[in-house]
Image (cartoon, rainbow, N blue to C red):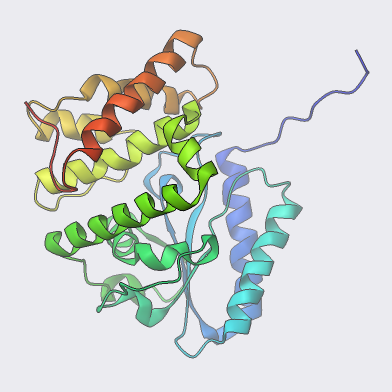
Length: 274
């Protein structure tokens, strides 16, 4: 023993909401009337937050005339808030100008980590409409958004798949993580893909709650092939990803390979049913 003890970070829902509140105040003070709104989606908005796998899915929306300098300053504020809170819970780095949330959806982008969210606008809009909450700013923004059509989402997912395939060819580390993910990444990937299978099967119904997507699919998608996999992924996520034993871990990693072999062999809007 060396006498040192490792510190367990507080990643509770209360801590996550404190981080979000600190970020919202800092951005509001900085941006003033150039800030349209800070929106919340994901597990904190749906009531399914779990310490460990849970994070803070915020979307900062600024006016169209906001400068690149302001957006860069907002990103630096985010980093400062995370540092102040020991990075206990991840806080997303998504900043849009208001017009980016409206048609026509952007289809050409310089895809880097810091601009990756430019490619996901249709998905973000659908999430906001489904369960978004206003943290600060203009509540009318939520009511003004128009959902993408199912056809638009099919084209979006095809573009996204092409980008992922291209990234795997260019980035060996990304490809390796996709081939041999951690248990946490495997669970996250399965539970992030299943809602789109539900969406396409039901012609546009949404469920972005990772804790309940298995139940929704059980009720609405008869003959779904991977219910056991969804149930196991949900169980591991609800436990915080930390209590799965070796047998569960091996099972979910094997199931991940089976699940995504099927996904990769079919078009984006096809659903695994008997």
